[in-house]
Image (cartoon, rainbow, N blue to C red; front, side, top):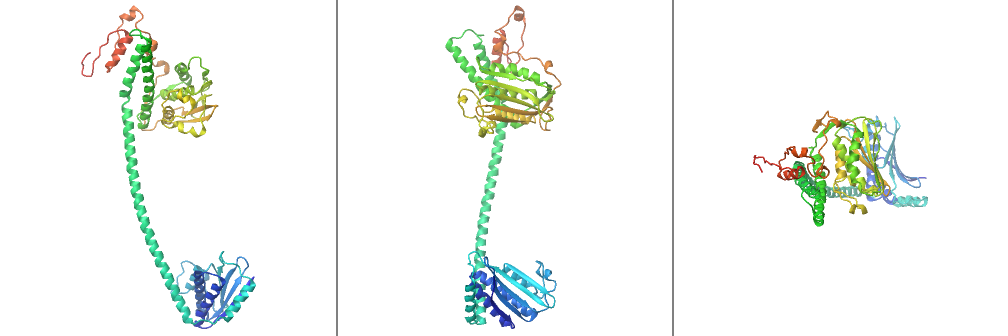
Length: 518
């Protein structure tokens, strides 16, 4: 539907004011708000002024088009020479010393759409389009007819009234601009206050972060440097309790044996916690020395088999299986740390497996990577906890946890050791089914430039076997030839001379750093 509401001519300059009045009246009666009325009236007067200025006059038509949604269209046509180089005039960077093109630029900002048709020597047609808002109802033909009748009966207002109206609009606009300026000033002040608070908060957080980092570094440095001081007294307690339990210093009563066993067990638990804590501290401080040597996985498994089987309780329903490695190359990395990782994983698997098997295997993964796996048929780990178990001092609650000892540091240490050796560790587990830990390590260890590395050309069969501990070494010399032998024990701790004396059955001589003998 296209309904022409009013057509008027612009012949004299005062007609521009009347056209502006009519545009405002029609916009008001159609239902546009006051701001839209001002926009429409201003755009129509600007284009009408152009028609009068450049073509000596023109025709203005007010039309309502469409059904739903409807648009208010004002068509202004004139028969002047037209607009030369229209694209340049409509460009954003167009500037004219005479002010040409300013009316079109203003109309484009005020209206929803501006359509221009130019025919050389036949004039210009400008269509100003304003969309009805969603709150405005569509007008029927009857309502539009009533609007036309109302316009016909309306007596044109005095042009000075329109000027007064424009002044009032300017005053309202200035008042709105002042209010907005005040709001912007207030917002800027609030933003400045907020920014100062944020800057102060960041500074405080940085200070606390630096303080925490220094404290963490001091803690790590302290623990890594206290290795000998922590382990020495624990070793003495364990050694002397072993002497007593092996009856090297005479028989024990039942109650004494019970108490010494308690001392020995408690010392072992404390030693495990201390060892794990110190190893973690050394890794974090970067003070772990990587001792690179060549070794075979089969030899590693043989040593682990003999070391871990005593952990199986008597009459156990759990089997410890080491799968024979196949077609694995010689590894060049730190055998001790690889063994430490696997010991921790196997120990955990045995603790939390009541029946079934713990299976240890190794196979080639992707190029240059060997994958060690420790698979058990234990209680499993819930999916939500499979990342938490690698955090320090985290132990997942379960019925078996009450019956097994642990520090919550073993898996964290395994993860950091694996990363230190250039590898990674991951877990696959289902509650009630079991868990599989996968350790992926490079076949050839490649150190970072800052890591301390010791390279050794020695093979396993060239390394002397360690002396057996006192619990399996017997209770003293076993032959006259042994009795005649002399034993030299060197240690800077007097307490260990007592252990050596009881173990060998010979008197010991202790010298401190000053040379004083005891």
